[in-house]
Image (cartoon, rainbow, N blue to C red; front, side):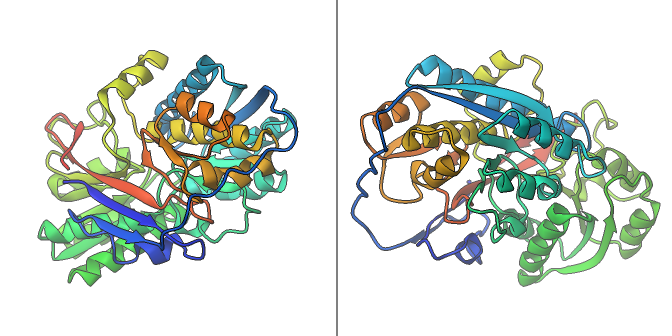
Length: 418
């Protein structure tokens, strides 16, 4: 059974208000605003002409989230191919750059380069912490920033001039789902190992609120900073508390800390992973090290045909996390450019909520080709892609989301169980 929250909110409501108390494991929730007549399409100014849209990416080619870079870049590349193959009045050029992580200024350097090339939109970063280092630089230049993987709740109310969007849901939702999962699995006490940044602390807070609301007790919380190489003190804190479960809220640091936790005597089966570290560890861990452990990751199950198309772009893909969200972010930017009849970043931003279905009642489309044809014909569209219904609210947050639950097998690969 999927964990799915659908919330079509009035424009004055934030995602926090929509999702509060709504994400219950195995239960679907529906919040509907008052019905409204379909909005008439706004006429573009001047005759329609073919658009050339340049976008940039700041996705992790290096650093603690480098395992997410290949699927995210493949998602962008596949979207660019689909847009250009459609040949419907818009051509997209993508410039790929590295985001690094928060221990470097790679993202700032990459953004400076992309802005010098007059991109209209930048896809990324994956890390919330990295995005906070460049969001002012991007949006201050009048360029759209749209992340496929930022989940920090702090973006919802950030002063971004209406130019920041994300196709991944806030961790207010993932925290609720994970907290309920751990409680329903029977753990009465919980330890937290937490990356001390906007992503880690935000997810830990949402998890704690739900877990303790379900009757559990967080008995230990150990923080670490990006770039730390020793976790002895954190492991000692957690193992001394002897919790029934430990949630590992990290990025790539899991490759070091998880074997160390198990080596200190903590059962690998009692660990819980999150989107920042839910990865294939078959080449990193001893067989069976985390067998039976679980984790959460935003997004619906990837359909076989979409997976095959991603592999045509990158045959070496071993992980598909956030590929769908990256694909949809790119498609939505192109549709918004068509709807605005412009490649100006601010005008694209003004149309992103509309083409996602977040304003008005556009006709639903699931492919760029069909949606683009409808826009050219003067219609309003509501695009739903492989990452599911996105439906941006006025804050640039998606108001519909699915959180997947996964379990590790004996070979330290993971499979979806919901």
